[in-house]
Image 1 (cartoon, rainbow, N blue to C red):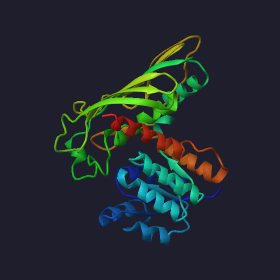
Image 2: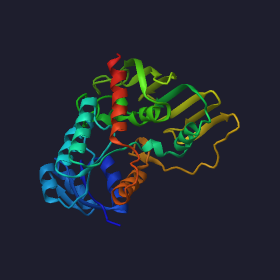
Image 3: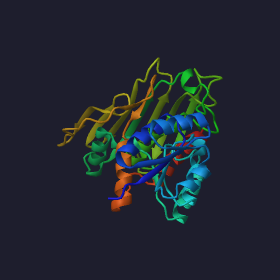
Length: 333
C-alpha cells in the first residue's frame, strides 16, 4: 500500500491534531505558516520541513499527495483552490468556506483538476450519531416529525484574543466556527432545509467579536419535518451540552453530552439501539473542548479512498450544503 504524503497549511491548534494522525497513517513532508516562528516550532515538533509561503511549499513538494488546509475559515477557499490547481488532493477543515459561492469555486477547481476535495464532518463518526443514522436509514423512526438541535458551549474572551476568530471576514460567525458540524448532522440525518427564520444577539462578547454569541432558529425541511436550533457560547465557565432530539412516527431519541457523545434517551416501536462502542474523546484545547476528535477516522478514509478506491465519507457537495444552510439562516435575519 502506498504511503500517502501530506502537507499542512496553517500551524495552529487544529493543525497539531492533523499532524498527529498524519504521522500514524501517512507521512508529513512539509508545513507552512506566514508566521515564521509558528512554522518553525511546528516543523521541529513533527520532524518535518517548514515553509513561510504556500507557493514555495507546493513547488518544492511535488511528490506530496494531499494538502490539509488548517488556515482561518476565510482563507479555506483560496488555499484549497491553490492546492487543487497545483495538482494536489485537498482535505479542508470545517467550515469548507464561509460562502456558498466560494464552496462552488472549490468544487469546480477539484473537478477541473480531477482531484479529490475532502470535507471534514467528524461528528458523523460519533457512535450514537452513526447508530441513529443507521436507524433512520432502516426505517425505524418511520416518518420524522421534528428535531431539536441544542448547542450550549462556552467561548470566553481569551479564546478570541489576538486571533482571527471573532472577525467577520476570517471567522464568519458562531454557526461556522463552533457549530457547523452540528448543522451538518441536520442535513445528514433529517434532510435538506427549505426555509429558516432566526433571531441572533451578541450579549456577552460586545467589542470582542463582530457577530452573534447567541441564536434561536426555526427550520423547515423539504421532507416536511420542522426543527429548531438553539445555540450560544455563553454557557457559564464551561461547555454544557451539544444535543440532538428527533421525534418520529415510531421512535424518539436524544443524543446528548457536551458534544453529541452520549445516547441519553431512546424509545422505539419494536427496536432498540444496543452495544454502542466507546467514542473518541473531545478535541481538548486547554481551557475549552471542541467536538469529538474523529480525525483519525477521516484520515483512515482518505488513505482508503486514494489507495483502494473506497467511497469518500464526506464529499465536497455535503460540505457546501452545510455552508448553504448556515448562509440561509444568517440571510433570514
